[in-house]
Image 1 (cartoon, rainbow, N blue to C red):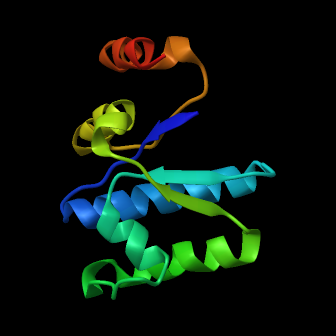
Image 2 (image 1 turned 45 degrees about the horizontal axis):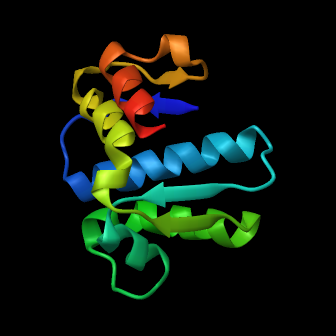
Image 3 (image 1 turned 120 degrees about the vertical axis):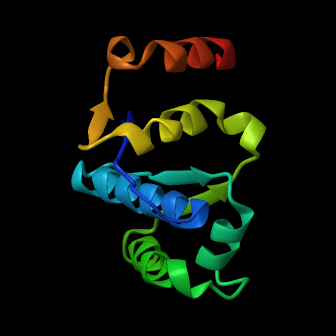
Length: 121
């Protein structure tokens, strides 16, 4: 599953936090048993883990993620940006969107995302 959601204006930290929250909520709604959220923002990861203080602009979203993590036993992991190229490419589409796109089949992914995913395999 991959998704792209309209973001509008804001900081990259807010966009990453909101995208993570959306994905976690979607997985919880689908009733998946083991949910692992991977993010390439060390700031966001450490704020969610309670290691760093949260910037006020993303505090509301981080608190919602923390609540989901605690209530549902979700796992949040940090990964390096180089290992997250597929997600970054899909995220770059978000500024052009007016609605949510959820991709559950490889064939429905945008062409450039398919290429990156094939290289990553």
